[in-house]
Image (cartoon, rainbow, N blue to C red):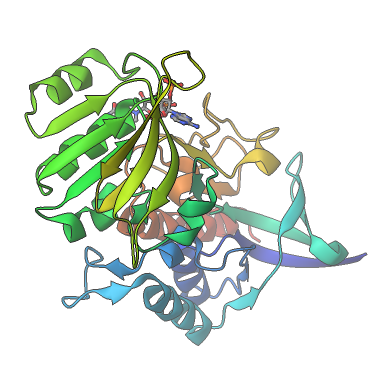
Length: 314
Ligand code: NDP
């Protein structure tokens, strides 16, 4: 087991982590950034990013990730790959253990471990990844203008995504496993009032079909009941909205998390309740979950880390 000391440790490599690294390295904090198992985070699963400011022609998720990474490297960030396996935030300096037994003792820690969209777990979701399957309507909805799409889920996110998609697509089907929407009243009312949305209650998705991309979904109505019925639904896009899972487990004993697991921060700042430990990006953001909002919070976290180090003479 080797142990080393750092002034600023950044865990996670989405737009939040890399932006924190750009700011921290320019502020001479000599940050160390661990990339985790999916360098670039959720962004790498998005084909075209058209809403990140500064790219008028759009950019692919992997290319944007590479640009952010290169910018962090340019100012001297040390980037390593590896997964954090243990965190001790009980007292400063904080100790994070990574795979292969590397222990990093850090004066400040920026948690930017992101959130993962939940999927149904069907092999077809992987087969059609980037070819009609998406977990982000704001990111990919634009590609389905005047096409038919389906949204899986019956919560507030699913309703929001369905309403957003209804402004672009020719028709939106909501695939809901129960006989009601669990979303809030207002969202249910908005969905009901929208003529472009059809809610398919008590339907489960069992597969997708299509030659070079999604052309439809295999559904089962009343799954497991005597009147069970197979239904094929022709669609061009299949959106998952069955919840997100913030990657905060490792830190949840120390920082405050909400009932879903999102790290709670102090007002508009990225400060957690542990001094010198900051949370940036989707791990602390149940509301916006955009690359640009993640980048902005990474910037704030690095500025906070710099101030904290200065105030504590570290
Ligand atoms: P929720 O957990 O509220 O809803 C998830 C939905 O997905 C449910 O309808 C659930 O069905 C369904 N689901 C889960 N797993 C499966 C599965 N395997 N197969 C089929 N369906 C499945 O998640 P949300 O992301 O919608 O919301 C999370 C939180 O964020 C909530 O508290 C919500 O209120 C809040 N939120 C608020 C917003 C706002 O105020 N504007 C916007 C977005 C979210 P079932 O009902 O059967 O369990």
